[in-house]
Every structure is written in C-alpha cells, then in structure tokens.
Length: 275
Ligand SMILES: [Zn+2]
Image (cartoon, rainbow, N blue to C red; front, side):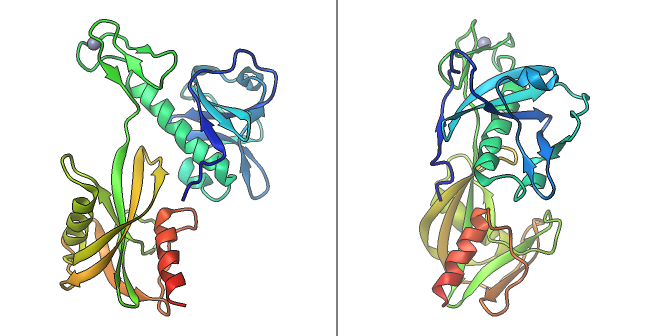
C-alpha cells in the first residue's frame, strides 16, 4: 500500500536550479497539465517562470526519483499555455503517471493549506512560514499551524463468500464500494469502523483488522483501511449517504471503483481469497 516509496519529502529547496524539476501548479484545485493523446503530463522545467504564468506562491515538496518537485499556486483567471489545460485531480486519475498523481495529491494539499492559513486563527495577524518545517508560526502569539489531515476509515465487511458494498449518492456512476466515513474527535479507529457500518447499513461487525492506508487528497483525507466480519443485523439504510447497500459475491459483482483506490484494493483482496 506504500505508493510513495520513491518519494522523499523535503521542505528546504535546493540552493540552485540546474536540472529540470516537476512543477505541480494549481489554479484553485485544478492542476496544470500537458495534454497528450490519451494521457496527461506534468511540466518538467528548470524554472517555472519558463511557462510565463505568474505564480502567487511556490513550495518545495521533496524529490521523486531524485528529481525535485515543487507545488505552485497560480492566480485565478489566467488561461493555460498552448497545449496545456487545468484539470481536477479526479479527472487526471488514471491519465497521469501514478507516482506523479500521488505527488500532485501532496501538492494540492500544501497549496490549499498555505492559501487558507495566511493569518493567525487566534490573533489575526499574518503568519510566517517556518524555514525548515512544514509549518506556519504567528510572530505575535507563537501559535503554530501544520497542514491538516482528516482521518477517515474505509472498511470491507465480509460474510462468508459475500462482501458488503454500498452505492453512495455522491458517486457520479452506478458504482458500489466499501463503506467509509470520517473519524470523530475522541474516537478510536476501531470505534469509527463499528459506528460507520452500523450508521450506514444497520449491520453490526466484529474482528476489525488493519489493512493499509492511502492519502486521499479530496481535499485532505487519510483513508485508513480495515476488514471486518459480519456479526448481526439486516441491511437497513440509515442515513442520506447511500442509495443502496447489498451483499455481493465474486459471481455477481457490480461496477467497482478504479484500481488506484484503497477501496478497490480491499475488494481485490477479498476476491483473491475466493479463488
Ligand atoms: Zn497569533
């Protein structure tokens, strides 16, 4: 589950620029990409100024396979250069190299955090960016801000040869996926699993087991994956989140989420066991 093994995070940029770097530039939450026939690419340039687009801020991210990576915040309204476009991360999911996709997911969160934490939440003055850590500090009252993450659990519930999948209202296509939800303050991850499954489907589960995790930059989640076993109950939709929830076996599969998601990794893990 470790997609970022080739990426080494960093905060302090290199002193000079002589080699091409990857530039993850965002206008709002849209990434600037090169359009290729059936793929998209990220600009690789020695300096971002080569593109002639004014940047509001620039943040060093670290190295991907020894190549430096930067996040850039662009002004609103400027059109993309010829042959390029602004695309939401969900739109480039599957079209962009997977390693670059995950770095873009880091980049959009750093840019968003920087944009939304310009001023101290306690005393209201302009924050200073920490020179060596991914942090902002208030020069008056010493309050620190770090990039925020919202932990969310995602769980595959098994009942013999069946798994519990739901069709969420927010899915644009009729797709079924594993259950997921945000962790509440004061709750353990295991408690969040039990609560979410119960709230969403009325099913009680047991044997909650850690599976793996995945950063999910929409907008700043960390998905923490679990498996669990059915204990009791009948499916009843309790909240507005899902249109449908059902038990599925390997021979009656619905449309499933994309290969890159931890939801699909959980489902594939379950299907692999059925062979
Ligand atoms: Zn302050």
